[in-house]
Amino acid sequence: MFKKKRHLLPILLATFVSLQLFGQGTSKVINDITQLNPIKVNAIISPESTQEIIDAVKTHNGPVSVGGGRFSMGGQTATEQALQIDMRSFDSIIFFSKENKEITVQAGITWRKIQEFVDPYNLSVKIMQTYANFTVGGSLSVNVHGRYIGGGPIVLSVKEIKIILANGDLITASPTENKDVFYGAIGGYGGLGVIVQATLFLTDNDKVERTDKVLLIKEYKQFFVDNIRSDSLVVFHNADIYPNRYKKVREISYRKTPRAVTVSYRLKPHDKKYRFNKFAFKVVSEFPAGKWLRQHFMEPFLYMGKPVEWRNYEASYNVLELEPKSREKSTYVLQEYFVPIEKFDAFYPLMSCILRKNNVNVINISIRHAKQDPGTMLAWARTEVFAFVLYYKQGTTQANKEEVKKWTQQLIDASISCEGTYYLPYQIHATNEQFLKAYLNADNFFKLKKQLDPTNKFRNKLWDTYYK
Ligand SMILES: Cc1cc2nc3c(=O)[nH]c(=O)nc-3n(C[C@H](O)[C@H](O)[C@H](O)COP(=O)(O)OP(=O)(O)OC[C@H]3O[C@@H](n4cnc5c(N)ncnc54)[C@H](O)[C@@H]3O)c2cc1C
Image 1 (spheres, rainbow, N blue to C red):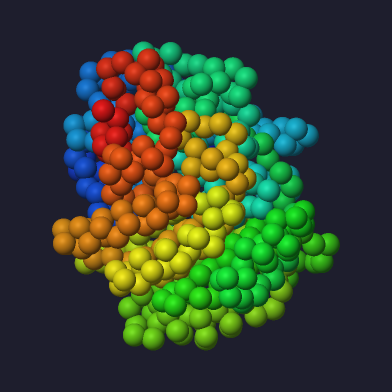
Image 2 (tube, helix red, strand yellow):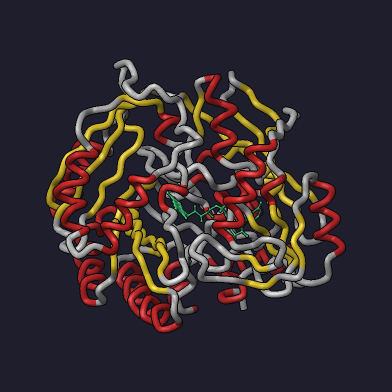
């Protein structure tokens, strides 16, 4: 196993950031980045070995919940009176092969730590989110995606996992061994067990050149089909829809290039303060002409030139850039909807109409693309899909939460009417009926849960809501 290097400064900094972001301190209240979901648990443990996790699962009588980076936004990592297994100290690299482009890690490791390890070998994580703060276990349990073209749900980049079941058994699961556990636990939100280890496929850390173009949203789907989907050089791609008119998008693509890098950093520097980014989010969400300024002033400036950077640089964003001074009265939140690519033109008018009618303070909607899921039970990409990642600001009062619930349910209905789904790591506003319509295979997941976890040990707010 690769030895852990523990330096005091990063540990102090991480503790400080956790206290700031999650308000945990010495209390047993678990919260997430939005600060909307405080949950009082019974105890929190931070294991550093597999045996500690096995012992905790075997000996604890009440509910057990699992926490990774705690960036999910609806209590997916906890439930009242649970024992919380905080995986963040379980973060070693176990095995690495440069030749096979594979890495085996403990599940509490963050993408950033993996990037720091593989970058000197000029390798990259194959599929991950835009930001690098998330843990591997949390990302697998959500079955995340990124901005990769030719990528899709992260399950496509997983060779195998090791998971501790409710009876304390440690088993290996892969597309060929304990297949049902593999396709249940990936995207299973901690409902089947604790993922302790994962072997992931890596890829080359290519140099990529950024280009961008503003176009009408009605032109986007054809643009994507003609220029992006079939271009094997495209590594990252997304298109941002400009609120509040929702008529124009800026597509942003990063293609492999032989050109020399113009950004010398290999990873985003640790010590960045993100003052400009934080101010820009404030302007867009709070200033009367903020959204206009973003579209016509900030972004034309931001997207000047065609920089060339390393793939790892573009994959190492830090969520700190989004963090406001306070989340007490208002907070930034995410939602996401997935529709089959042929339904793009049907879905976006429904979505913009709902957002406009409800005066939602939308900061951005990022369009992404994902390949079809290979068979996870709670797949959000039942076919090839476009994802609409909605980033907005909401108030924190009960009335604000009710308002958000109302229009969220409308958006979920709109997505379902287009044969689509919505994403589960965010606020739990969907009715049981909506959940079952969006996740058509949920019954099979529940059957597997009943078989593997007959006493319903592995619990959190998501499964408390939908697992009856
Ligand atoms: C700013 C921001 C940007 C985001 N961007 C993207 C994006 O680009 N693409 C995308 O797909 N998602 C995105 N997300 C959502 C994000 O991927 C999920 O919230 C993900 O869960 C975060 O990982 P985490 O380590 O914080 O997991 P957590 O929130 O800690 O956990 C998520 C779920 O996984 C379970 N879990 C955690 N670890 C384990 C384990 N070891 N074993 C079993 N179960 C476990 C938890 O119980 C919980 O149910 C974004 C979120 C934020 C806040």
